[in-house]
Image (cartoon, rainbow over the protein chains, first blue to last red):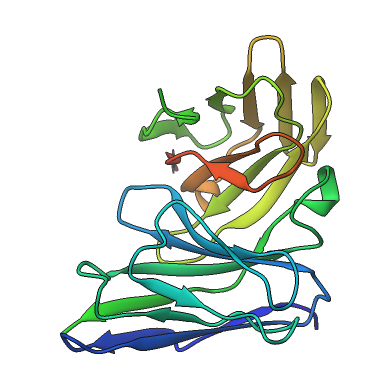
Length: 117
Length: 111
């Protein structure tokens, strides 16, 4: 089955700690994205990557970092600089980052809920 | 002005009725439009996409696009309690170049 997996489902962070959220896809998609969702709000883009070894900041990149060493994987690190990290984190992928229709249709993983201890 | 706007709701409809969800967007050159359904505590699930003016039907769902007026809507016929969820409108800006999401409309279908 093709799809997107995220782990862990729940993650607890202590103050001052960096934590890494995993995102893997086997859809052979070129583009991958990280979003943050707060209660009652829409999705806000953190980072996105169109190809391996390249990524761009989204609207709320401060306090986060990413890497894209493999096409299938796009891990997100929430650093200690992110002062309000409690949120639902969603990873998505699409065939391409630019284009039309199917190229930009995004599919989501199940999400990781990050809580601060 | 927000790029993609939706009425937050909740929109309450009786079982069997038609639910109408609306979305307006600011970028006149947007090319692709999507509706996602999100159940509480779950991730968004794509239910409809539309790229051309007019209507697109898929089962009980109909997406309507009017680029001149910059709005896209989703109609759900014969609404069921299982349709109760938050519906997110997403719009591609320029030629692809990421999706911008609205805050979502909460739909409640009462049996």
